[in-house]
Image (cartoon, rainbow, N blue to C red; front, side, top):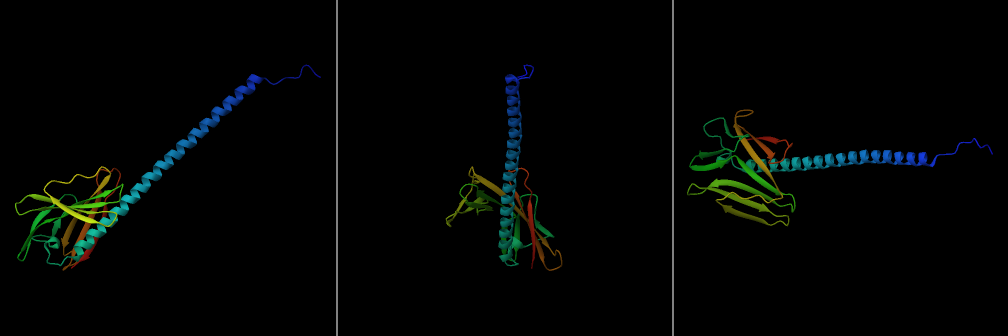
Length: 203
């Protein structure tokens, strides 16, 4: 046997094994970070889709409520001008149609519980003494509906998501003799959400 034949160095082999392990760990860490980032983006996208779906449902619900009212109802009347309500601010107005006078709110708040699926709608008003009242209608997941009126603004449950609805009624738009009603629903206290807007035309 040739004594000049080289022999493998155990230390060198061990060093390469450690280096390979470190490279593998680095690749694994990069992969895990990519998966975590993808998971976060998927969760955000899922939440945004859920918000948009709820906004669409709430806008449609308000449209149905306003469409069912007769044309002479103060809630859909446009007294003394071309528009009633606002899409950018909470607006109330005293409206008189014939012998009927009402304080009309062109906004409301809806609180949807993220945990148990319950939905609460809060409507403001004014009682006979001129004090602002808050009427909350709660729809429980089991189908039970409860209503309570107080003079103190209700506190949202810790897991609730609050949606704000505002609407505007435009007279003789887009043609004479009709009203265009536009509802905007926004998500409160949640960043990066966009308002949802829906319109309809009625007599």
